[in-house]
Image (cartoon, rainbow, N blue to C red; front, side, top):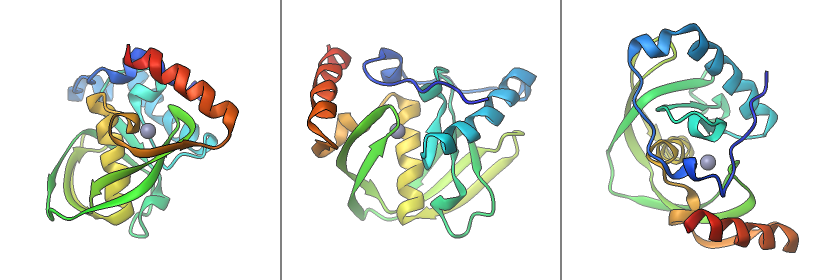
Length: 175
Ligand code: ZN
């Protein structure tokens, strides 16, 4: 089942999400929710999706396997944290399913060390570089209540109508 995407100006997007306990994670409703997040991400042509983008403020996100050539399957990250391995940052254009049709340049660390649980609560511990590191930082931000509109530069929309809607929604979201 595909889940509806939460978009700006919905205020819950700016709310920090709650960490999951193992018990909450292994609950059958949560397991079903995770199973639904992956096809939702693909349906919406996203490379990642965080739980608050599908109306649940918990620290859980999915990352599509195309995010890194080293990935064999889509990743589920529960309660993710990361350490910066290189201070070097890179700027690239990002979009977000919660901010449809609008893009901006975001600076991200390009080498990080990630710790999280997978969907079964197994510990994950890995390094991520470049685009993969970018996607994880974008999803991590969602879990803290941060969107690209909070940090992007040179935002632009795909057309005038989208730009007009974006400005209205942005105004409502921020106030
Ligand atoms: Zn996003």
